[in-house]
Image (cartoon, rainbow, N blue to C red; front, side):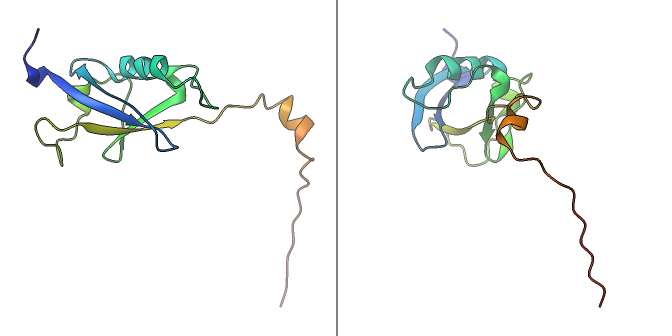
Length: 119
């Protein structure tokens, strides 16, 4: 096993305030692989469940992490102390609508209106 410096302990905070983890991850792991792990650990009782990696956004210290980067490349050491658990926020993309079918059926038609006032 590699040294402890190659591993980072992370917990994931969901929008409702619940957490997944903490768990240890290798810093060479990509953000995309990390998102797959989050999807597999996603609580079954949650109403919204991510279907793919593209449905999940990870935020660390206010920065959205890119899928193709590793954890080591994505970490922001500001505010991190050795041995501390890093909290990353998980944001889900809202479920997309099939714009041609559902929107037309559910929403009233929008009329373009222009209004000018001359004083």
